[in-house]
Amino acid sequence: MIRAYDGQTVHEVWPTVQKWLTDNGAKLMRGNDSVEDVKQAIDTNNAQLWIWKTETALGIVVTQIVQYPRRKVCFIKFGTGYNAKEWAVPIITAIERFAEFSGCGAVEICARPGWIKLLESAGYGSRHILLTKELKEQENQNV
Image (cartoon, rainbow, N blue to C red):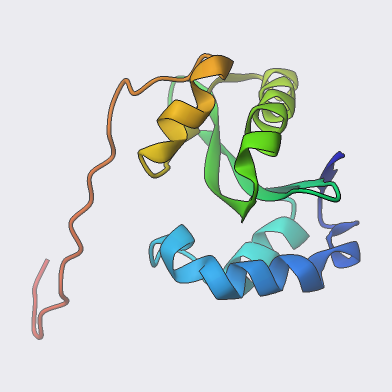
């Protein structure tokens, strides 16, 4: 049901993943990544792709190991699919095991508020909230 993909295996599922990211990407990636950026990160093993697939549900999650000065964190960049009640906790549990194996001290998720209720049973809660304000680029802006 759950399978992780890296640069060696992502080609097996990329057409399906690409369609989901293309259809939902603007919301999911918040302007930080393009579909091509995601593929390149997976191809170069700088990101991981997780897929849950059954007859009744599909979950696509992309993670990335982030090295902070004092610890590593497995950051869940985004997730999409349908019938998340079926796959959210199992896929997060698999990601947690991967994170521990990779020496990470935590798993971080940037998600919509509905995910809080969905992942409460897996021990997640809102400790902080990520707020973002998009800034317009100004001409002749000196930084």
